[in-house]
Image (cartoon, rainbow, N blue to C red; front, top):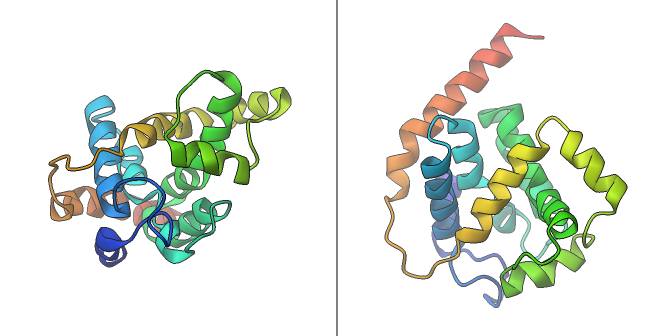
Length: 178
């Protein structure tokens, strides 16, 4: 919650030339889209909420922000949330390959090239077959919708019970071991 709260006045680019909303507003919007579309998938919703904290943790690292965020959330939120967060950039690359006419925000289009561009057909096939690939695509589709300036949403405190539930489940999985 503390890291998310610090995202209230943080942006995806240090000079604020990127997407038009702060990281926290973006995460809240993405999580709200996922809550509507996938109401029973709390891990996916929380992944949407935290997916871009890497911009706060590693400012200016477009290619590595997803990995930084995944590494930060895995100990608390578990393997699946971390995997989805870590794959949200790859999901953009996948969609660029499989839906080439699909629109992106100007910032997402700019960073796509910094992040490796559209996947090759072989990369896209492997991504689609990966355990979390299609869930990461669901996250990415919501990510593209979560950039609305001035959109009124529930504040961060309303997400606390959902985050706590996901964190509790992750802790139970860790305790049960392999």
